[in-house]
Every structure is written in structure tokens, then in C-alpha cells.
Image 1: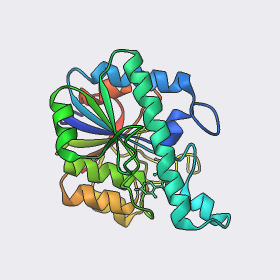
Image 2: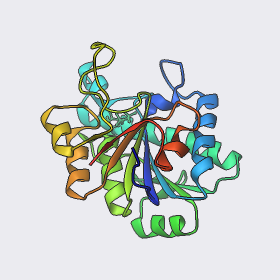
Image 3: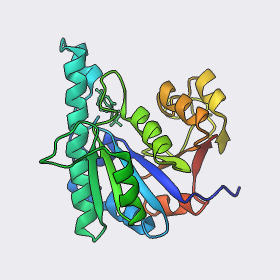
Length: 236
Ligand code: UDP
């Protein structure tokens, strides 16, 4: 099946993608490999990235163990800044120009999020890595990805995960589960298909931004998916 090609894309990297085979934290080899994948498509596409933080800290897990939810969520947002710096460092090591912008200003570490400035970076061919999620507790970096994709006028939101798309049931539990090539936003929401959280899916639907779910752990997959090939599910 031929799929549409996209020019300006937002890539969402969840924290788990950066921890490799480990259970926690950042695996520099894995981050290096992901950076190579990104570098491979950086010339032909305008790219920005939203990084997650779940490999380091999740607010919900903290609050389940008695922490104040808001403080725990701020810790989660700070975790995304560490991941953003790791991705930046890996990209710059292989010659890709980047800027990190955080939704929570921390000017000695990175730029604050300023949409017009991000726009200018992208026009100059830099990859902008958005950290700090939305800057608000009770949200996720999936929602931040949908928000930034809309703000930056992206043609698509690519969600790089460790599965090769969206299934009608959990493939780890249901052996007959089928992968969708294409699925509607409304089906994702009504069947609770857990592509991204519901607010992120609704924001993409309302702004007509397709979500492409693919396995970023497989070498060369990002380039294949952007060429309209490769295994992925497109939500639109
Ligand atoms: N977070 C938040 N607001 C945001 C984005 C993230 O409070 O706008 C917090 C939240 O606690 C979340 C954590 O940061 O659990 C890490 O983000 P997320 O779980 O989305 O990371 P991912 O699953 O993509 O690794």
C-alpha cells in the first residue's frame, strides 16, 4: 500500500526507546543508534522531536507511591530534559545541528520554548528537540507531541515505539491480533486502542495531523516509513 509522503514531521521518542534493553535510564549506544536513524532522514525532511521521560520518571508512578502528583509530574518533565540533552549530544556528535527548547525555562541548560524561534531553527535545517512536555502537570509527552506538531505546522506526527503499529488487540496476549495499515482517529478513541493518550489523539484529529506508529528500534525503519514504505500504522 502506498502511503502519503511528509515534509515537515514531528518525531515522538518515548523514554523507553532510549533505554535499550535496560529497565531504566539512558543507554548511550541505543541513543547513538536512534540518532543515526534521525540523521539519515534529516536532509530530506524538516524535523522536530518531542522526547518522553518514562525511562527515568513518571508522575503517575510517583504519586502511586505517595508523592504529590503535581511535584511528581514536574519531576517527569525534568526527566525529559535529560533525555533531550542525550539525544542532542548524540546528534551533534555525528554532525547534525540541533537546538533543545524546554517548556520549562532553564536558560543555562537550553533555550526556552519560543515558537517563532523554533520555526527559524527549522528553516535553517536544525532539528529542534522539544523538552519539558507541555510544561503542565497532568499531561503527557504524547499531548506535548500533538501540541507541538500543531504549533509547528507539521504534516505528520511519527510515533517511534518498540511495536510495529497499532493492533486490534494486544498482540502479546492475543495471538490472532491484527495490525491495522490505516485506522481512523475515531476508531482509536472508541476502541481505546492506546496509540497515544486520548487528548493527544483528539488534538491530532481536530488539526488533521496523521499519526504514524512504527518500530524505531528496527534499523532503517524511520527512512522506510518516511519514504512511504516499511511497516507502520497510519491513524488519520
Ligand atoms: N509530564 C507532565 N506534563 C507534560 C509531559 C510530561 O506532567 O506535559 C510528566 C508526567 O509525569 C509523565 C512524565 O512527565 O509521566 C514523563 O512523560 P511521559 O510519561 O509522557 O514519557 P514517555 O512515556 O513518552 O516516556
